[in-house]
Length: 102
Image (cartoon, helix red, strand yellow):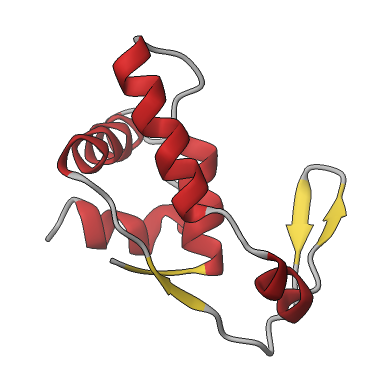
């Protein structure tokens, strides 16, 4: 699935930090898949500003990420839970369309 920089960062933030061993192993692998390599760091010039991350918006980086069925289900579940609680943010919009409405 092709994901933008923002989508990758948002997904990294909604993945669970705890769970059973099998799920945590899959989450760890997905975090690696969503992470940014050295070339992307150079291109994007990431800057951590407190809780926020900024990057060079003039550079468009899209990565084709492999996301398995179990992790897709987990992401869909998380996005639906945020929607149900009324906690979806604008940053979640494109992910919701890709994962839930597809």
